[in-house]
Length: 547
Image (cartoon, rainbow, N blue to C red; front, side, top):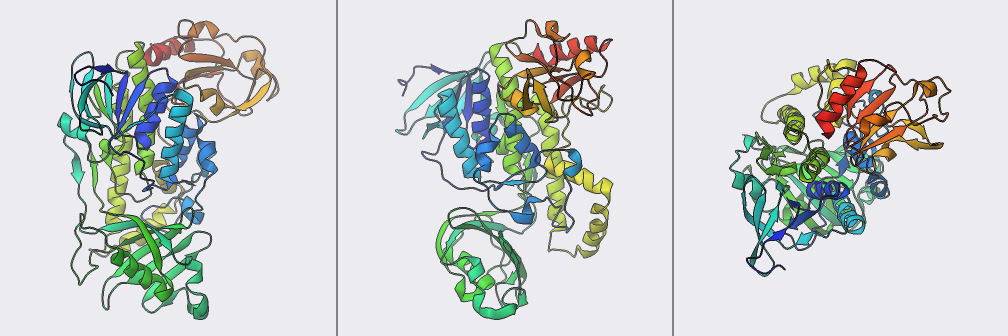
């Protein structure tokens, strides 16, 4: 520990070692900027509130070669890998978007955190500073000085060029900035998520009940989801309101139980901050599976509502917010961790550019400009779904109408793109040149220097890419090797520390001859013709995004 009063220096202070903070730290380190990650908790909790990666999140992790390790430890979610809107029984179809990952991937949040923390240490030599709490900070035009309290209670100063609050929904950074956290607290309903160890697996609960063991019986409707778990409706007390539940297998004999009911004890609403007792969880399990549904251990439990909130600014001077510190969302569809990881991926390279001194004017402000609307749209969708799931009023007619609408291709495509993130478009409007501009670069199969590779592998270094298909290569057969250095090599001179120029062989169906891709994988320039005014547009894009 630094002596009290002596200022320790770093490049970027990252408050919080959840998925958002850890991915941001990895992105900064990959770009040659040293972060210091502060985490109040002395050890990881091992808890996993999130269980899924949406398609766009899977794609961005794949751009850094991070996805493969997570895929070694999948959670079998069965049909739950498909996305739905407010539980309406029409799956949202992501296949038309052409992603390699058209469905959600089941993975524990704790796996994501462990992988990112291990990579930060093994690849970049940076250790999360656990048991160290950011208790305050001051900023000036040159940087931020934070006050950090260590495990022994001593407080020391830490100086960085920037501070990023990735410290969750109760963010101390956000409160210190005085930013309002506007939004809605939602309705009176509360929901519970609990990880439990069972005496026997759910498929054994109904063995001695015959063909009626699972289904509508004794006031409950229990459905078995093969290789997933159970779902349905139960009643916790005689004459009480029905409660929806789900029970999904995770890892190592652990199950995630979720249930909701605003009137679980004698008709009285349960407050959101009320502790969750073991008996409460046992009562739900017994209502589902009878005496056979015994719990061996309650690992952790959390009660939550359907609040949706968002700050109006993601940046105040040299302090920024990301993840739950910037927005919280009703957890239907599992968007929270995904939004945070996408925030970090968008911010990392821009913040690194600012620290290293090559960021063009306004680059760092595009973080708010690009990410705030994405989260706002997800929050709006979550509020709508919460209303449709409300049991305070009859939504049957509206849900029946929406079922027909979601079945229409246009409606389904819109909701699928919104939910999956596959239609996100950054830094462009619909009138900006080639249709690819602003969108994530497709993960094409390429031939580069005689080697077959996916485009995503070109992004592992975290740099921009100027990808060129020379005219002579485009006239060759798809998959053949391109000849020569390419016409656009001079364009990246002076930017070799931030852009790789790559010449590739032709790709079947390709309608562009060159593409400029930002470090986060989004296209910022594309051209169809071999010569012409596109050179001016390329220069403008290089200046705008790479200085």
